[in-house]
Image (cartoon, rainbow, N blue to C red; front, side, top):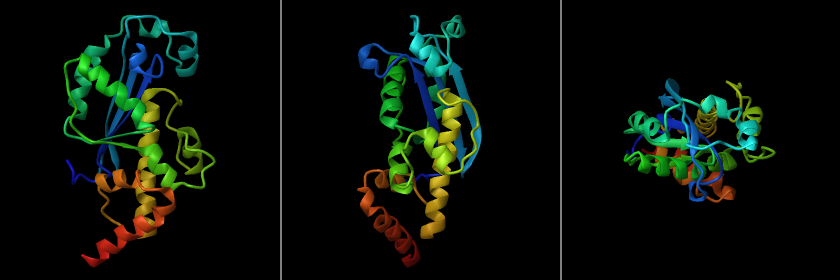
Length: 212
């Protein structure tokens, strides 16, 4: 898992009833794309019934209504299926701490586990696109010239656009620093580097590659 390439990952996004499962919130939609060598090769999208009515704010924010959730499978059933989709892959999410909280919580309820690593595309974008007005997904998509693939705040569309953003950042590193093979661990480390040292860190990757 440690030596997996950065361009071969599962990119995921949750829509939820609120900010944290610790406050009783649940997932209502999961969307994910499987990226292999920089190409989206598979998709996963399902609504799930949290077992209670969602608020008018969440209906407005996501476009997911209580009517849409009627008759949908419960979270445990969906997440059991999703655990098979992500098995053996590292994952990426925009503001990953949010999505990872719900992933871990819902998988636990489904009696499933996930053992891969997780990297935050938002943190990486703060290093790569330092001139962006902010680092919200919608802003970055516009800033990087990425085509919109659907409606923001729906899980599959957000996952697809996050994947395109992720790949655009990998391509920018390749082009500017001459690093052809970028590992998942290297981008995870970059996400923790102080952004003022981004250039030095990426230059060192290119230098190490040339010295091999």
